[in-house]
Length: 498
Image (cartoon, rainbow, N blue to C red):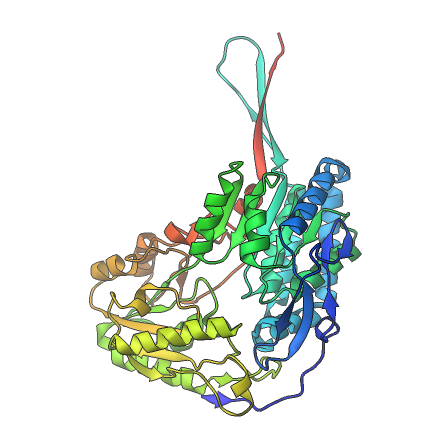
């Protein structure tokens, strides 16, 4: 494992230690309580900003503003105008993308080599939603009732959306929530993760610059058990769109019962990534490694259960371990760094706890296995890329979501056994397989109980292709036309003409 050296911190204007307010009704305001919290660089521990800490009263103010906008001026804005706003926002995101990617790196640690690669995705999502804005329509339906009765459907915005996002990709997560809201004519109250709120606040600034009217987008930073809980249970919120852990997702479902609000959930995973003996191993080694090590493993669909055919198990897992050892770990502002820190001390304790569990269960760490404390990295939350061999299906490291750079390598012998074992998880978000056999690829892809199956690649994403989970990985879809439908109600209209 290569370790980067200390580098000068570039002080972004949005991360220079100053105070950041929340956005409610088009105005930047303090929390009603006056409370603030700190956000720090997980690579160095340095203070980036203090941020207004929202709670129930602030959520009430933001929801009220969103309701006024939804029932007032925003309801009269035509599809073309909403499309134009999204295109202007896309242009501003593209113009300011370098600073936005740097903010993600500073606030949650992902290397610039990763955050800079999201330009096409971030801008592309906004332009995709802009295209969808003018494509929303109902349909005429010939009914079988006697007489002359005309029937048709309308697609209408669901209303005020409460959006709650995680810290592992603030820029794209923010766009994934506000894009379809604007496209469909909804309004939104966004609660960013307390670990990484800065990019969401900066996107809100750009939205105002693009001309998004007051109250259409509101951003209330705060903690999950206060601001997040208040948003999930609010009786004037029509829908909650949440990305995060399955435990929090379950609590949101319970909170939604008060007014039976719509809910869409993109939750955790323990995804299988399957390597057959006939695969192109030169492509599969880096592919399987970075299916987990990218973003320091802080990806819900990471391929953390690496199933490898028995005949190539030792060779392949050994090669993945050697690949992991060569990755450069360090401060994400260094453009050569491939693996940044975990987002927080709490996440560090969680991941290192699982490293101890894996070794106690009898798994062998062929690479990594502990915290990185060399030189300048001692002040950050770094864990070396870890490959556990000899993993059994019933081990905790093979069953529970770790959310760190940890691979659990599991051997298999035949395809029927493999599919059963790959599906033996409460989750069903992502999955991957590596093979040269097209028939095998189709058969396994059809059999896997997961929302996405990547063949000879991993984590491919596009704004037009839906993403979401089976089982405990949630319901609803993001991206694609299915995502837009999540923000719409369908109304049937009957007109008796004679």
